[in-house]
Image 1 (cartoon, one colour):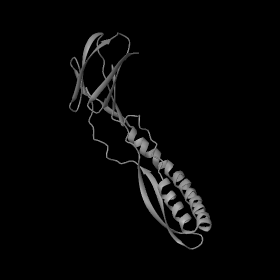
Image 2: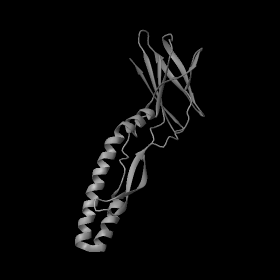
Image 3: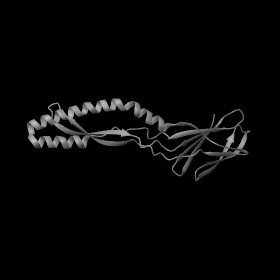
Image 4: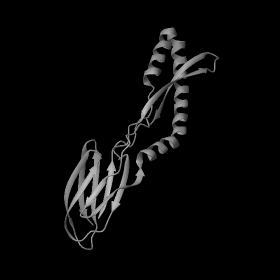
Length: 186
């Protein structure tokens, strides 16, 4: 029998707004706003899934922290994101200059407001993936078994059928105070 435990969800990316003071090509001092995505690394500390069946007891061992992979992916993508943002800033400054030339202070103000309101970080992320995965395995005799599962204050007892010569896969997913399970014979 193999137990695969998926715990939580990867947190959503957040955005950080930074004022960026720069001199324009015409020598004017301007402040631009840039939005940068980041992961707030305040994921809940979670423990292993405690598993018991018959006289076999144990806890799952970590397999992968997907939230760490998501953060690494963002770190690798950030230079390209910042390059695109620099190009957007240059285009927005060109638009502001044109609006200032044609519309005076009102055009300059309207484009400045638009630029500030339209600046958003790319916060798309891996929201539907578990934050981490762990596993546990043991050999069991064929027949009906009662599987006890516990994670923090959440517990569940699950009847399973172990077939000789086959692997019983028990998938467990914890979201909040719920343990969702699925049993498959492979």
